[in-house]
Image 1 (tube, helix red, strand yellow):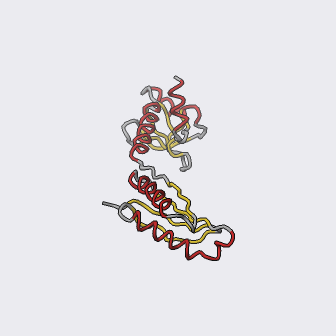
Image 2 (image 1 turned 120 degrees about the horizontal axis):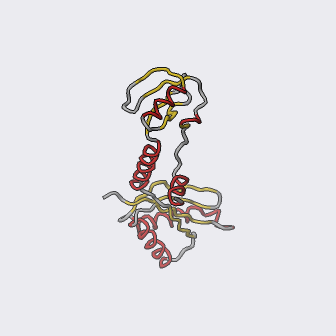
Image 3 (image 1 turned 90 degrees about the horizontal axis):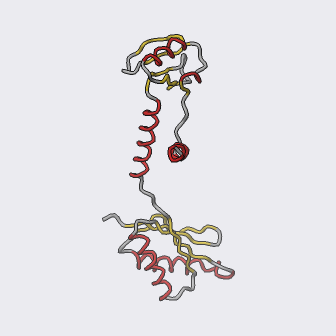
Amino acid sequence: MRVRIFLWRCLEIKELQINEEIRDKEVRLVDEKGNQVGVVNVDRALDMAEASKLDLVNVAPNAKPPVCKIMDYGKYRYELIKKEKEAKKKQKVINIKELRLTPNIETHDLNTKANRAIDFLKSGDRVKVAVRFRGREMGHTDIGREVLDKFVELVSEYGVVDKKPKMEGKNMIMFLSAKDE
């Protein structure tokens, strides 16, 4: 029982009014086979739902008059949860990994950072490369751009530039994504 409640709370499904929760006097009724019955009194609709041992569900509360359908509400909720789980399984999550460089980075350190970026790109993640300028380095942003150009050359076999280098405050930021093969 606890597992079921947990699943219902995890997945956001809008709550519909069912059976006695429906406060309208008249509703447009659709029976369990999908046939239009017409505008009927709520009490008559509840009696019809009870006779077929199903629930009366308000599927369109904003309509005038509201549209209610006779269905098995538990089965309906179960199928909605199942569809939502399937949609989540097919969804591809792309993470953004960040690497920070400095304008006066040494060659070996740059190669090490490039290898990390290649690992990230191989696993399908995007890479945010930032060159941080401090103090007097702000006057030499061209050096930072050269560092980013060298970085792009090192990872060019595995990734392409998504967003060109751009200054944001004291950082020059560029995004890379994996090459489509």
